[in-house]
Image (tube, rainbow, N blue to C red; front, side, top):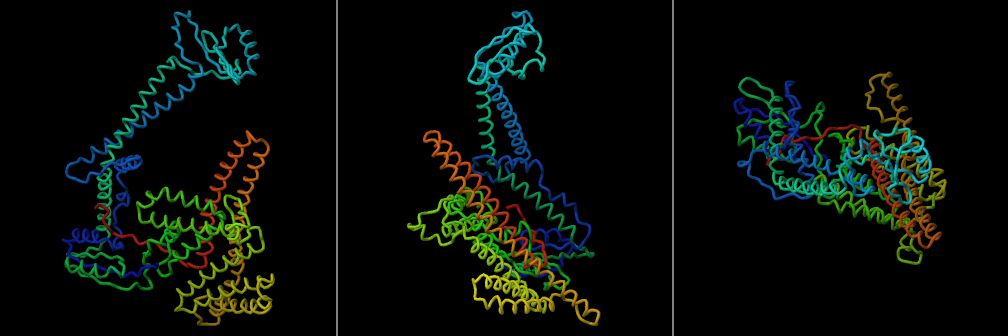
Length: 602
């Protein structure tokens, strides 16, 4: 995987064929246009038609999709959109009415089946319903007696009493200890009948939506056609018109050169292909593989590498998976994560980017399972040392010293790779020696630390490490600046640039220590899992009967919470180390993505 090489292309064609040629380029779909005019059309034209987009979104949420109709000549799209939006409004209206009935039934059911008599039969008296806690009944009785209000307790349960107060007007809100229950005039049986009718009507509306899903493809094509027309108008306004001919300019991948040449010959268009100059700022077109391209997609959410740098997608694929595994630190959690991704595989496979991210998630899950087996954690439970899983648990997560060394080693290696790749990108310049110096400084600092802790021979702490630090610092001091030396003043300024570069050693130290979060978060997740297990066992030991229920709830809710926290930590902090620490040392400039001028309509 790499950044594709681009050529700048300038096409010259007769003005009368401008629309036809642009339509051909749009069909070809391999060109990133460069505006040659400031009179471009309003970007709002690229917005999707609101009603059609709303209709498409409504149909996409249907659990089932019918076989698609693809004949565009026998359908009125405006009528279909109107039918879909009417269905959406009807479903919402019926659903809201059903929800209100459910709430009303919940309030009335506790009073049972009854019908209120007419006001004339009660001589103008009304019934007022109250649900009163058992402990408040004595106070309620005294208040109603003092205010000469007749009342009756209909029934009670173990917590509440159901009381009806008779009065011509509603008692004052501050008179009784509880608010009034709004029961209404409609009997419970009638409410349940209306609810049944609402359920049937809602089913009919949802069935109608499912039937309307057969228009999903044609609606999508309508939106795509609108987008294509807007893009064509934008491209047409961005050309340079010179009397009887016009110019259109853009970027094309070198691999598409033959296709462009064939297009020019077929359409009678002159073209000039040029290599990007130093003043040009080409877009970035990544060559993403189906297997490990998810690394570039994940990094692309935050940053696009510059055209003249390198694509760290391959490395991010593996490093992000490793960081996720170390933070998850449980084989079963990682396996569960992979199972969830597997459940949503159909939705992920709908797009190429989704498929690549799915492969990344599978690899993250596999790496997490391997790391969980190595540390011996299965939902926070360690295997028996005599068993097969016990023999595979060769990493002790509670060995703080070893885990700190491992985290720092991973961090230093990650940053060294970033600096080496920066040096490779700048290999034609002496400036490439500065990142080489940083790589030597980081490796030397690590070797000195490991030498002082007896992990490496003491010669690394006494001689190799200090020598490497001096050599690396000299490279950073001498080659950080790209300022040309033309006088004593420029030489002094270059020296100041070198000192400023060396000062970044504090930043390097902080970035390396940031990788300690791999150990800290992994340990916290594993410790929390063991804590929930201990609490569950304590609950089980405290009561052999009810303790089973509480123990199960603690295990279920506790591990769900811990699993969610581990997922969030693994994604956020795993990507943070790649986006902030790694990119800070590996990518000097940010780019912008290559956007093909292509047709979206089939």
